Length: 143
Image 1 (cartoon, rainbow, N blue to C red):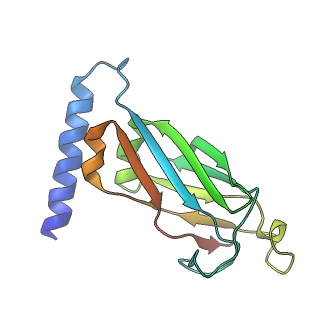
Image 2: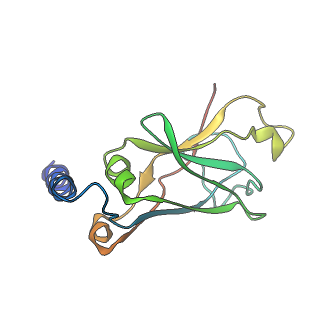
Image 3: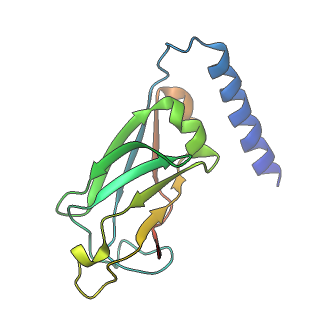
């Protein structure tokens, strides 16, 4: 509980620093990298699942798409967003959504539904100008 309070205090401090700065100032960038699995389930293990090539991955914050990428042939992706989206990502206001149907990577998997993941990453890098996050684990959600 104490670590959660400390985390929220750190986020509030960073938010206050952002609010004091000019709206024109760029604070750095948010970089998200990961691998998308071709599988169903909850918290899918990318080490034991086949990769999902050519899938569209979106970073959605508050229901709005703020960045996107397409996976490579090995299922990996990298995307960048303005640092202003980092605070939303830290407090769970953002998620990665793969809306390309799983049937595109394996004909035996469902045609409806999406892979979704929250984000994880160390808070210490927030002040360095580049904040790196990764999927916390993709889970399949029926639509």
